[in-house]
Image (cartoon, rainbow over all chains, first blue to last red; front, side, top):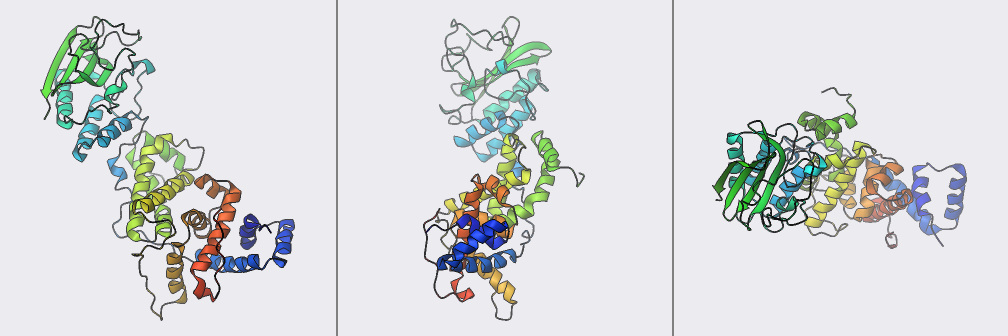
Length: 244
Length: 190
């Protein structure tokens, strides 16, 4: 015998239409097991409805863990943050990386054009104006928050460049760079050694008002940041920091 | 923050980085979330963890919440999943009674209701997880079947049959209290 379990829940709730109720009652007339179950279900239903609502514990902050999160605004922040956590960055690094994210481009929906996502990191139309001090700050932050192990082979932040030729910028300086309307040169291309590991690229920035691209790389045990003019790809500024 | 700002607007502002908007969302939903977690998990410590996890996950995933469902529906789902993760982490089979379940007041002179609630709360933890969630959502939190179906991502018919099975399992776990000498025969889970 099949038992109309779906209907039995509603039967106990008293929410069945008349014809369905009649059908259930016909079944119950011939099924002791279901009669027992309906009786039991009725009793517990009352007990469950009488369960008191519990108060939040004294001093409990429901958002305590949420407070450490920056709201995801499209995934880039989250990808960068999670990658670093995933490969073992210290908890303190997260705050610093978030700080870097603020530095590079404030959160809240980076509005970079799709073709500009040639590198990892965070883009924002709002704060891409750089000067020497700000580039130095970027280099300092990256050096402080990365360890030799942080940017390993699993690092997607570093490997987000979409050049089909290679994920290592500068590896083959004469390889054709696919035309991208908003980027005319890869910062540091040709001037970086083969082992350079790209960390972040800001394709559309300004440096002291000049249209520029900024690339941050790990080169051996150092962080190097290269600022290149977007018009003629000359290097406007470069700086490096040793990793701790 | 106006108390009548719709959840949808608070969600939108939260994704734009407005932390006050998110704080308001938390204020509105924390009690329900905590109660759901408490009834699912049975221990204050676990309920605290699940609640804080749920809001953290919600904030992180907020941009992927499209808003075609109600925020509270989505938040319930996040909470149920957070509860499940807590149970898995503690390596207990859902449905197995945790040894450290809280001993509530059960003095003879307490009101019958109070002692019964403690028993029901503890017996709930013996109900298999997949029955317990719809049971709590429907019989404790008064949510309608179709919303529960949305929360759990299962058909409405499945919700209804699990609620029935959950009630039967709960009654069996409470066996003596209802003076039911023989327990119901165990049926296979659906």
